[in-house]
Amino acid sequence: MKRLYQIIPIIFLLLLSCEKELDFKYHVIEPQLVIEGILSQEGVMVSLTNTTPMDEKIEKNYLTDAEVCLVDISEAKEVELKSDKNGLFTNIYIPVSGHDYQLIVRREGKEYYSRSTMRPATKILGLMFQWIKMPYDFVAVLQITFTDFESADDCYWIKIFRNNEPYKWILSDDRGAVNGEITEVIMTSRKDLSEEDEKDILRDGDEVKVVINVISREMYDYLIALENDSNGPQMFQGDFCLGYFMASESVSDSIIFRPEEITQYK
Image (tube, rainbow, N blue to C red; front, side):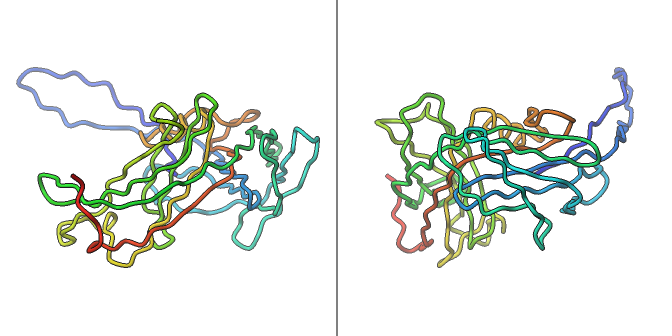
C-alpha cells in the first residue's frame, strides 16, 4: 500500500524564451497511523503501521502498542485481538454473513473505528488462459468468470498470486454482469519471455491463484484511489488515520500455466 505525504510545488512563472529549473518542497508532517483490517471466514487480521516520508524507503514496521477489538454490532458481541509473533493483531473469530462489524483501535489516547457489513463469497465458475495477438507479440490472457449477486451495485476485488506471491489485482462491479455472471480478462505474460518484464513473466508450471472478495462501493473507491497514487477516501472515524477495514468472505481457485497447451483466441 502506498503511503503518501502531501507535496506542495513552488509557484513559478513560465516565460517565453526563458528556462527555469523546477523545484519542489515537501511539506513535512508527523507520521500518520495506518490501519489495515480484514475480517474473513478465516478470522480477523489487523496491521498497524506509520506513514513513511517521501525521501525514505518504505518498510513494514508493525506497531503493537495498541488495544484492538472487533465488535459484532448485530449481536452486541466484542472480541479482543492480540498481537502475534509477526506484529499483527489477530483472532480466529468466525463471522456471520450479513452481520455488521466494527473495528476499534485505541492507541496513545486516541481512538479509531470503522464499520463493515460481512459480505458472502461469490463463486468462481472458471479460469482459462488464451493467447491473443498483439502488435508486438502474443500475450497470455487470463479469463476469470464468476457469479454476480442479484443485489445492485455489487463490487469485487480480484487478486492474483503467482506461486503464492502477489502478482496483479483488478476491480470489477456488476455493470458488466450478463445473466448473473461476470467475466474479466487480465493480460499476463508475453510469449517471448526475453522481452518481458520479470514482474509479468509466467513460466511453464507456475501456479496462478485467483482470490475474489465482494466489497463495498466505498472500498472500491478506496482501491481506485490507491491505483492513482492517492490515499483515498476516509475509511475510519474518530481521530485521523489512514487505511481500511473490510469484512468479506473470500473465494479462490487456481490454474497451472502451461503455455504449450493454451489455444489462440479467435
